[in-house]
Every structure is written in C-alpha cells, then in structure tokens.
Length: 584
Image 1: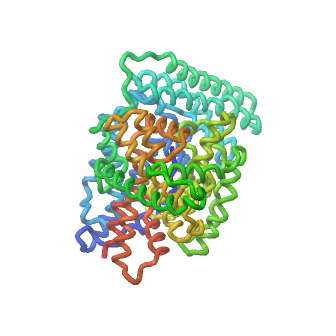
Image 2: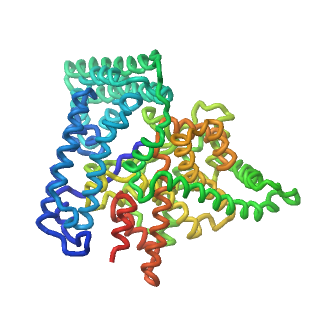
C-alpha cells in the first residue's frame, strides 16, 4: 500500500536545525562542513524532484505537475547517472564530522541512491512487474487535492496527458516474461483508473470557465489517454509469455531488498527466526486466556485437548460479534473520538486536534493490495487532507462478506483503528510533519512507520484500553500474530518456496485468520515482497528500544516522554533513532 509521507518544515530551516550536536566519535562536529551538507541536501532535493516528478507531486511540491516521464531506456540511464552523481557528491563529506542528525540524513540518502541503482541493475522489476506502470494515481491526486485553483491544475494535467500514449508504448517494450499475478494486478488497477480520465476529469472540466477550444483539446487528450490505458490492459491480457517469471524473489534478491527497504540492524533470516520464536510465545499466551474464558462461553463442555483447536474455537465464538456490511465504514468513523479521549485520559502522547483525518471509500486505482490504509499529504502541502482509505464490501457475496467481517469483528476493528489511525499511522505521520529534517520524511522508513503502528496496539492495551478484558487481549494476540505471520509468510514464500496450501494452513490454523483474509494475504504476498516483514521488524526494534531506554532512564522514565521523543526523529529507521535516543 502506498503512503505519502508527511514531512517537516520549510527547507530554509534545514541548516539551522541540523548544525548542532556532536560527531560520531563524541567530539564537536564541524559547523562549516554541516552548513555545507545542509546546502547539499537542498540541492539534492531540488535535483530529486526533476528526476522524480510524480513523487514530487505526491509530497506536495508542484513545480513539475505537468511532467510525465516516459519510462524508456533513456530514462533508466538518466536515473542511474543521477544516482551515481549524487553518491559522488556525498563522498566529499566526512560523515564522522557531521552532527548526529546529518549523519542519519547522509545514511538515508546513500541508502536511497544505492537502492535505486540496485533496482535498475539487479532487481529489474520493470521487466517482470507490469503493475509498476500506472499513471492514474498522480492524475487523480492532482485532480482531487485543492492546493491550487482547479483551472491551474487542469492545465498541468493537460500537458501531462500528452505523454500517456508514449508512456504505455515504452512500458510494453520494457516488459519481458512478466509475473502472471502481477500482470493480473496491472490489468485490474489500470482498468480501475480509467474512470479518472473518462469521468472525473471531464466532470471537473465542466465546472470551469476554460475556453471551449482549450476544453476540446483536453477532452481529446483524455480520450487518447483512456484508449492507451485500456490498450495496455488488453495487451497484457493477450500476452502469452513463453517463460513467465515466478513471483518468488529467491534468497539473494530477497536479502538485498530487505537490507535496502527495511534498513534493520538485523538480517532478513534473523528477523524470520525472531518471528518464529514470537509465534510460539503468542500461542502460549492465547492458550492461557482461552482456558480462562472457556467456562464463561462453553460452561461444562470439555476443553479441547488440542491447544490450537481450543484457541480457534474461542476466537470463532467471539468473532460473530461484528458490524453489518453496510456499517463497516461508519463504524470506523465512530470509533476514532473514543481513541483520542483514551489517549488524553492516560496521557500517552499529545494528539494535535487541528489536523484533518478523512475516512473514505478506497479509490478504485488503489484496489487490490490492502483493505485499509492511510494516504497523507506531502511535505509541501501540510494543510492537505489525510485519508483513511477503507475497502468497500459492496457487491461481495454474503459468505465472503461474513468471513471478512468475522475477521474484522468488534474487537479487531478497534485494533485496526488504533493501527491505521490513532495513535498509529495517522498520529505518527502528523509528528513526522514536525520533524526538522526534510530527508527523514521524504525517505521515511517503512519498518519504523509500520512498527510504530503495531507497537501502539500493545501500548494501548498495556494501559488499560478495552478495560483489560481477556477477550480484547486474546483478539489482540490474534492480531499481533498477523504481524508475526506476515514475516513468516513473506520469507517462507519468497525464500523457502512455501506453497499456497501451506500458506493458507499457516494463516487459518496457526494465525486463526478467516479464509477470506488468508486468501487475500496470499494474493498480497504474490504481488509484493519484503514489505510484509516491516510490521514485525519495526515492532520488535521499537519494543527493544523502549526497554533499553527504560533501563537507561531508571526512575526518570515516563512513557509519554519515550513516545514523543521517539516520534520527534521523523520516519527514520529505528536503528538510527536508537543510536540517538540512547546516546549520552
């Protein structure tokens, strides 16, 4: 799921905010060098937006809204040249003489550039992932956000539209023996985005006073764009590759992608081993709670001798408590104020009341990966809406909807809101918007972001959310198993060749998920890789950090201080935040 990361303050403040502190050896940092590095950061960001105009638009920098880069061989060469040029520029700075904050930025930039080179030279997903070619998202963003007058945004769109036919022709030339699952995803998502050009754009155009001749030109380009998108989807549907690539990455590519994407202090195999151990622990806790609850729900009925069956039956009994399909989104909206009230009552961290959170039906062009996500405004558009995207159950067969709602029962739905919204993703992204480092926000670490959301679930229950009811704890352990088994599943599928049957067994029998949820997760692991490990990896590293920080602070430890201090570093990898928080 794609999240636009919030960022900080104006770039002009970078030098002032980053030029204090010590170097890596504890000595005084070089103020002249740090000032030069901050100036370099701004030059790097300026160049980054020229190279990545879609990303620029997504984070609220609108100087390149009219630019759509055609993904041909020349564009790949330009991207490689950009990465190498910037890496050469980084080498001119002695990292040991930079402040702590600037050292972290240095490492984030370096990782980003090396990852970009690796992606083009080694991963080569442009050759086997047709879903990486999709223009709808940025066009919809420009159309729907109110950062500039509608006429101005439509004129930027009009220029961008010209390159869409060439964009998809270049995409076709790139693709070689594509992954079938990713081909199907590309067809669904591109077809889902056609309405942006055939309906949304034309409806917006009719609301303006743009001259008729100019409107006619835009309409013609929109039609040509829609034709190109549908043509790409049809081309993919008719494609019969001789040797389609497996969606499984394999160990070498997986470990490399994990290192670049997760930026953990652990390797992928170490995180997998930790997840397996965590699963054993969680099973033990769930068994204790289920035995405690059994008489309440089953009276004198004999307790199952199989422990997993015992837990499964207890979860099934509690899961029938859920909302109706048509009330799913409204139930989420109604839950949010009570989460805010609880956090204030327990004084867990400050929640900014001025930042809007809008619950909406998941847009069609985002469909196919996750049932709930947060889309936040970019760093240059801090006043924009933060959207809580909720997948719709409209048109689902009754049995499938019932299975889904049992998964997201009245207990889990509350935990979902904690994770996605408050104090999870939404709250963390609001804090990230206050970070003095633009780099930390732009290159935000997914494991830190997802890990924080998982951590807050536990943190809320530890402080009495749900009245400390064993039912809520049992369901949270079930939910925590999701993060744990996400890691086990992802690594097992992409590295250990786990079959679909084995995966479904893991998710339904050992993680107690409904069949519909397990089927959806199999689809997700077949169209993504590594991202599913971010939840448990970040969670583990944050829990480890909190314990270390608590030991360091002793009697001065306060949970609110830890939470707010942790969030103050922006969306940096936890291993870097750990270095800064534990440094004396």
